[in-house]
Image (tube, rainbow, N blue to C red):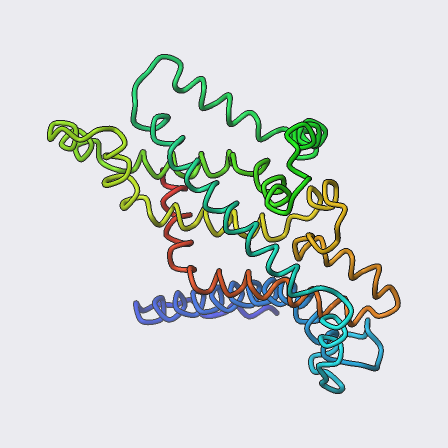
Length: 293
């Protein structure tokens, strides 16, 4: 004979049941998020472990290294021009990010706050470019770069890497959304006071959209820092490679030393982590503002 469980008869029992269900839901949610976090982070953690060991099985799952040594990092610096690659990446990222931010902030302003025929049509036509893969423009960019003679000098080679990536559709979209969130009354007040459109952009729009600008700058920095395909296509001198392109060179240089390649990978990722940790607050505020529009 089946015995039925006693049903709650008091308000206190109902509240206790709701607390239990709420606690169980939080435990399951945090457990699932922790599992996803471990799955996401472990490849990078495995790379760090591999770069710190000299012996042992590489592909065996482990939490701590069998031994710790900096020999793999020394091998990377002694056999490859790492410092020059880092310098190249810094120069390319500086001019690339600054140029992209300036162009995106300028281009987004008329598309968000100025009225002219076909404004929305132009914006959606620019957004349609997102469906095209980056590889679609490689041939045109290569021919243009050669015709301009940019590959004949060191500054020209830097310019050849930076110029094709200056116009960012993602940045244009993010900053247009940020501009749309600024009250129109501020812009009208500035116009009544006699401010030009460029003054309004510089003294009203830029300060108020700074979180979104910072978020875009971080995204563009990560994309520029990790880009390697274009540099590998147009550059013949390995000394001019950015760090990401040099990492592929390490893969061939240390074809029998996976631990050295892992050390080079860690060195490539560290600047991105530092930039993100430094500007994390602005990044989250900027993404939130862009989503709200």
